[in-house]
Length: 267
Image (cartoon, rainbow, N blue to C red; front, side, top):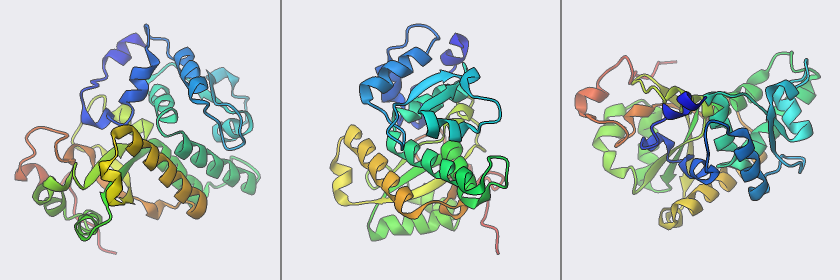
């Protein structure tokens, strides 16, 4: 695992969301589950039943019990010694309220179906997509911000990401959430695409420091999930290396590559 951790380039902008959690661990060597548990205890992380979050070996998951069901019932997060679960632990410590709501939603779906092996349904599918591959696009709730979102949803990539690149930072931010997405970006490729959830933010948000912005996102998105649920229609695609400033040589030709920045399919 030590060699895998060394593959992570923490200077990459897409790791900005979880870098503070990583720094707080103070890892000494490759072992991370113990550091996760110490930090989770310091943060007083809880699942939706109020049980303390603890990172346990994968072997703790009983045969025939769904992963999400086990976390809901025990607060224990089965964790393997790999990058996938390493990033999952960092996200738990970065956006704990969102993770809690996603787990609650998935556990409720399993309970309603009577079995984890039955057809998953759109809500559980959407929760899995969110958990594994989501990015959060926080946009100022303004006419310019809404126009940017409309262009992204319409796959007007040149307009949204090249012509309006100046909006990113001042009026729009991308925060990665999905741990599988983070794992894929250890070896970045142009085609890697996030399932992006739009979060409109008030002007005050853009005056917060980074820690306050992260807390606002966590609380706001968790509340929306609790109130409104989730479906696969909640997402819009975003090629991660196309986020302005996240990759070198983002000239116009970069965004005209239709194998990555694909036109929207007509219904």
